[in-house]
Amino acid sequence: MKRWIGVGLALLLGGAVAAAIVLGNRGAKSGSGAQTTLTTLHGVIGSEKLPLFKDPTVAKLFAQHGLKVEVDTAGSRQIATTVNLKDYDFAFPSSTPAAQKIKGARPGTVYSPFYSPMAVATFQPIVELLAKAGLVADSGQGYQVLDMRKYLDLVAKGTRWDALPGNTTYPARKRILLTTTDIRTSNSAAMYLAMTSYVANGDDVVTSKDQASKVADALAPLFLDQGYSESSSEGPFEDYLALGMGKSPMIVAYEAQYVSHLIAQDGAIRPDMRLIYPQPTVLSKHTLIAFTPKANDVGRLLTSDPELVKLEARYGFRTADPKAFAAAAGKNAPAAVIDVVEPPAYDHLETLIDLVQRRYLSAPRS
Image (cartoon, rainbow, N blue to C red; front, top):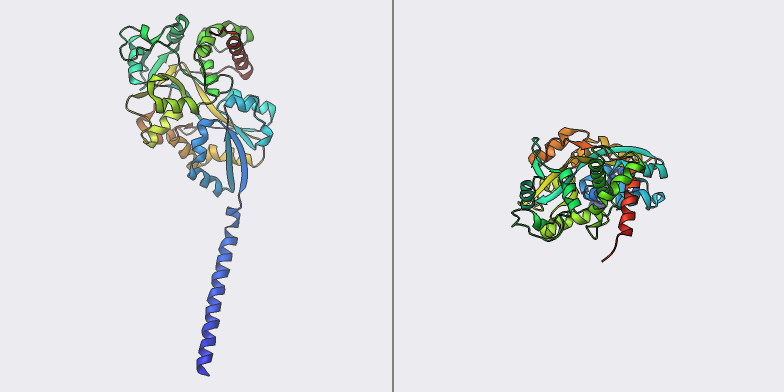
């Protein structure tokens, strides 16, 4: 009899322990329910920001605030002109002019969490050639610059690489041209047009249709003579990393694309690669437009959350906190880039693009 009582007590005790475990698990799930039930937001972004949004730590930080952020990529001008914005909670193009256009099409709250100067990704032999030709010089601020006025003069003359005096390192027959993305779809090409239009307009921002018309003929060859161009900035930069200077000796890029690899120390930037800065250059201000109330959380977090700001800097973006970028980049990038000009307002930039495009469509084909 005592033996059966002992067995019964053991069973009761075991059942109580099991019940406590189940209840404990249920309590744990219940207590974390607010964190595991995430609000999914959909955004459309410029492709150069995709590595940041794909970072698991970024996803984790968003999740801590109850958000799951999913993104599609497109050229910034595509976002502003052809993407169906009704499909998204936010848009995140790479410039203020594109953001102006987007906000006009679908109103929202604007955030500018980070920016990146436009730069030129190239190679040491090319830098040496251009320095001998008087196009590349030291800025006096710890980085090298490409004189855009002298560059435009070379383009106007149709100068080819093999015509440069003493050129034995890159005697290619093709024209000296910066490789860009498609001006009809991509912000980086539009920013290149912005800086070159400033120089062609007598060192002044284009502010009228008449000014745009006067400079368009000089600027059209910058794009027309390239041939095929990629629709977004990711394509030419990947070619730059993979194919070397044979295909594209100089490409227009966001500083962040280059510097992020240096910060990561992933080996993508080889010893012969260099980053120089156009003189003048423009800043690409990555601007988020939140269309829905919850999307405001994305804009606020990207702008002010300390951990996200550090991650943005690690991906090469300059934030409102210069210390964050300096801590991440170290000697891999200058503390500041001087000789920066503003791009034209959206309407005037669109006029320039339209004029260049018309000249492209009307150009004779061989």
